Image (cartoon, rainbow, N blue to C red):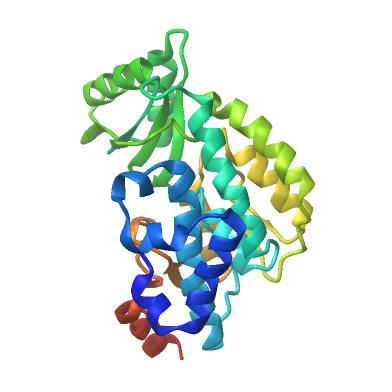
Length: 293
């Protein structure tokens, strides 16, 4: 993750070097060499993805590319805030390291789960979760795109919900391999701990609007971005609405910055009329430069 770019671009290497200094251990070595089982621990995954994303962002910025709007899915909202100038890289990478720790510690391993439900409307999925709860927690966690909702909560309740979803006509209802049940009420302890850290940080006002996960509405004040990050921990990511809001605000070109192309797929499901690019390695960066410069 990011090794090729760090070797070629000094500005990318400096991002990994700064993350190593802030965290006090060689995150860059973990990104470049693994091992994968250690990289998959959420307390490592979160700063690794953020650092790799900002390394790509700095290359784009060096070429003169700046966003008119920013948005990020869950963890990606932190990268978006760095891109908008609200948070420094140093503050963000330390924060998401603790965010990962708090989330993992909020629910013992095996107690929580997440599942993807395909082919049902959000209201249908919410009703199924309410029926499946039976005294436990299960609720929509990611409202990703038309016909794709991820649910989270206690493992038994999530499993009951997948059965009910299939009975209700879902195309698929599959358990996900995750380390914790993100964006549900079980994350309240993590939200409370992270809120303390967030209140200690200075958030600058944003250079461009952020469409928040929790409200799918634009914010430009640092204080508002901070409050949205607090609420994001235990509430659903409203990604479909976020994309729709961006389009309504005039966004016509989306660039997914960082590892993977998951968001491009989700955006395509929401609105096929917009241009989409991803930027994660040398080849994809060349495509972005050819399209936008």
